[in-house]
Image (cartoon, rainbow, N blue to C red):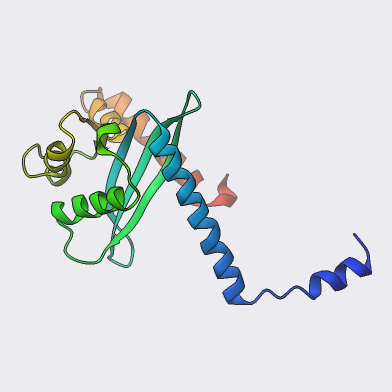
Length: 181
């Protein structure tokens, strides 16, 4: 497309595995710094905390931050942390607390925490919710949106429940494979 001269120049560029991985690491560090700066500059932010186990049986902590950036709400992954030890409330809270301290993110600006409804996360005394209330007593807690939708459909009639279940199956089939889309 550009001619033989450009092809020769491109072939002379060395791209070893270490070069590519270093560049990927540099880009991820830059993205993380940008998200942290936007979170710190925002007058308030909220977090969504989720702990899941992947296919290799490793617990992974995900923290998504929602913050105000130039009069617009933005949402970005703030923390993705493997929990190698036992997965306790203390481990989860300490991972978040350490990250906040390391990146100078102020709990005072946190206005909300969203988790699933398990006692592990939502317990107001021994759960993550209770631990966060100690460092940020003003924080409000909410339930995951997708879980709220599930809870709201419980009192539906059988016919509407069947329609919802069929719709979920269709969407899951389409999303399961890109060729289905």
